[in-house]
Image (cartoon, rainbow, N blue to C red; front, side, top):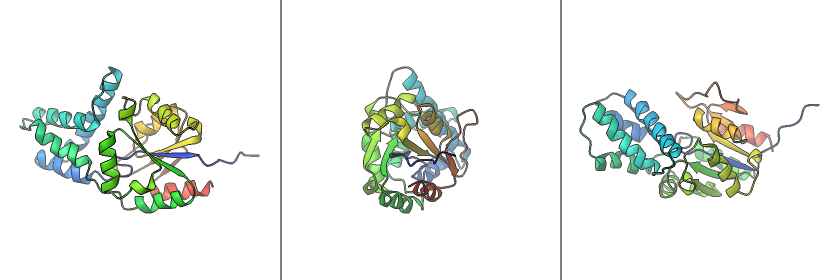
Length: 230
């Protein structure tokens, strides 16, 4: 007899791109690079790269600060003059004013009503996270807001996920991460969390990582699946 998949006790949600639409920041960066939209993915990859560098070297800087300095680095590579102050305006302030993807609020509401504990888990610092959820009108759905600032390591470092489960008083195997990043779900799975991959446009799973529990196109489909486990 096949074992029934049980519902997790806590749902962790990645924030940037999973819940929030980065289009406003992408538009500004594309304009900075004279209409070259490819530089957006280059910048975000560089941001993630250096966030892992600081984790690997035992250092820590706010995600937005790393985003600003890497944008300045990329501009310099292209021969574009960009002050650190202007880079911070684009990135640090930009992260705080992002809209939610259109289906997110309704999906979170359904999950909340079904009895799930919802927790935001992000690489952004605590102040930015609070501002993001408030601006996107999502704050009321979450039982807790967790920033990696508290542990001084960035996702997908495995210690982040174990720490997050500890903050919620549950075993990692009783939690599930929802994220639109292959590196994020890979980190969660290696830390013994369950995971659902949100396959937003242009996002793909890492083929060498363990398989996620489900792959869905958006948070509506994720909510359908999770509510079905209740």
